[in-house]
Image 1 (cartoon, rainbow, N blue to C red):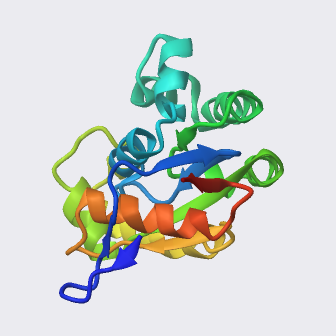
Image 2: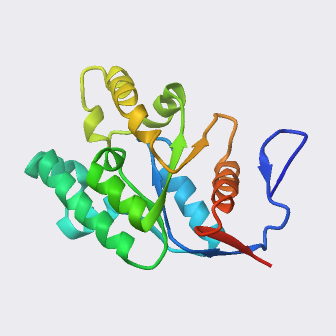
Length: 198
């Protein structure tokens, strides 16, 4: 990677570069930070599997996350989430997108620290709100004032997300490709996690 002097975002010098992924990369952050979109692009760039822990839970439960919340409650969901994350971390290295609350649990942070590397996609509140306000798939935002709810979650969770191994700042001007490049740059600083193959 090199810095593009014209616009300040990261640019690939060679899109055909190959990488070796040594551990699972776990993307963390609040809803709307780009874990799924950036995760898929990152997996494609690194030629690694992409796995979404919420999708794995939905498959196992044969229900949507919203349905699991409504039917079984958040405590049940969080236990299933921890089981799924631990199982995925024991498997082959992959790019793992987690739900916004997953990293809050100490047991999940411990498992990720032991078997993977956490990357916080650090987006500001206004950007997060722009991305989630037109979606009705977020059970935690089904409130009278969803923006205030999101702001509360942002304030409560920020200090926990700051515990992530790597912090990659997201800005409105960054495309998915830009963010993918920024994550790769951060990972390349940790050769036990990611190595470029000549």
